[in-house]
Figure 1 (tube, rainbow, N blue to C red):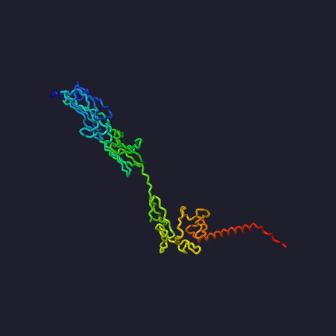
Figure 2: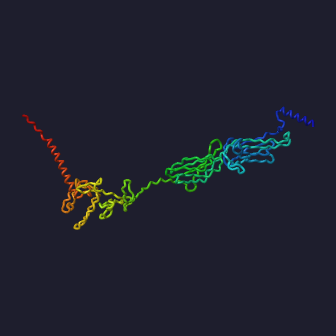
Amino acid sequence: MRKLTLAAGAALLVGTALGRPALAQSSGDQAPVISWQSPDDGAKLAGQAVHIKARVAFDGGVKSWAVEALAPDGAGYPGYGTICEKAEGGSPAAVNIDCVWDTTAYPNDGGPAQNRAYVVRVTAQGGARSGMFSNGQAPAPRHEDRGVTVSNPVSAPRDVHLSFVDSTRQATVQWQANPEPDIASYVIQERVGDGSWKNVGQAGGKVTTFTRSLSAPGTYRYQVAALRSAGSGTDTIQSAWSGPGAEPKQIVVAEPKRPEATTSTTQPSSADPGGDPAPPADPGDPTKPAPPPPVFSAGATGDPGTPADASSGDLSRNGASISAIQPGAPGSVKSGGGTVGGPVGPPAAKPDKPAKEEESEGPDTGFSPALPYKQTDANADKEDGEAVGRVLVGLPEAIGADDTRRLLVPMAAGLLLFVFAMHALYAARRAAPEAPLETE
């Protein structure tokens, strides 16, 4: 027993002198080796079949190995965990590892994986030969790491719908949220008519609705794309564009209707601000007012033979009352002992002469159509054997009665003769030479 202790101490001293630890392998052992084949350090990976390849060799044989995809220390997102592992029977001296890694989803139904940076680790455990180590224990496992970035593409938005509210002229684009957990945003494009597609909005990664007001007329189309993190920094990956799959696939905004011309019919009972009633509508054309009915001297608007109401003393025109000018009232004209402007009864037809129809000469303006005076008809020039005379310009026919004509025509003629006589006398006096004064 003491001899063994002395032998062990001697071996320890020899090992220390040779620079070897006390639990070192025998002179025939080799250190474990892990040789990477793929992927390269810092590579970007994507897809469901990424191959992790390496070669592991131990002098005492390979007992087991494993491949893991881990999140870096302190990361706020999960890793994939163990991807592949195997225990080798018979402890072969070397093992070639080929592990298939689905980078799109976390194992064990963990859902879609995020595009992030990960650490790929290959770990190998070597076997131990009997008497190989002084303490009889197997060597510690060996591992090698490589940093990679997972950068999978993003799927196009699904179930895109388009709607339009005509009263507010707002178009709304809706879509279903993408399954990827690292969607950065959604981009919305618009196309008007045959023009090019233009970005008109960008929604957050959790937003699935976009509303836009349309004012100008035209045909509007929309499409949506998703932006996903590329795995490092602020870089993003854009999906394909998706448009509405069901009607309406586009929105047509028509030009506003032009205002239609409106017609108004004036009621007979309505009156303008001045108090005069408006004429009724023409039965032939509702847009044109009918001409007002004639106002007769008796005050009625229908039959000339119907006298006005003597108690009221008013003339009626289209339902409105007009006060007649009373004799001696302001605005009345007295001429020849008669008052012009008062109620005048219609002339009674003589039994021996039939009533004569008056010829229509257009609207009655109250003035003679011929200048400076109007020569009446030859048959109408005399009535009851008396000359009617001529009608002065500007004298209304309704006022110019026989007595008025007999009075005004001579007065006008006399006034003209007086003016000419005075002018001639004045001219003669200026032309006569002054007679010289006689001196004694």
